[in-house]
Length: 156
Image (tube, rainbow, N blue to C red; front, side, top):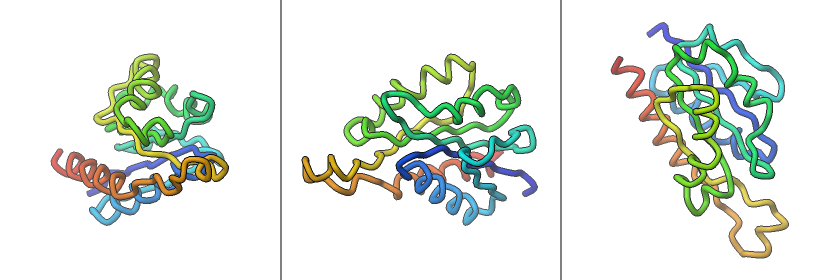
């Protein structure tokens, strides 16, 4: 398969990066050519990819600005697009996080993603001590989602 897949992410606390790496590894294991990109270092031109997986975190109830720069690229309109979010909101209700943070951007930029998901983010250390919950990340969910992506792409 000659198709190229971009897995691009922006992170501050590291959760989105961890999820992006799991997704990239899983897609590679499923036979896809994957390029991983940290949007803090580079904003790639999506036109050269067939499939684009975009991930971001949330801070102060907003997704990160560098991530939005990718969403503005017109070439996204004809790509297999998948979007994920890592946030504290997703710890309790992943659907609520998708509706609150991703859905408005999809509508604003007139995107047509094949899937929108939200994974639990990391609880900052100072807060984890207060409520006793330390590990909230669910990499197995990202792996399962990436397997679904691989299946969708390969069945086309």
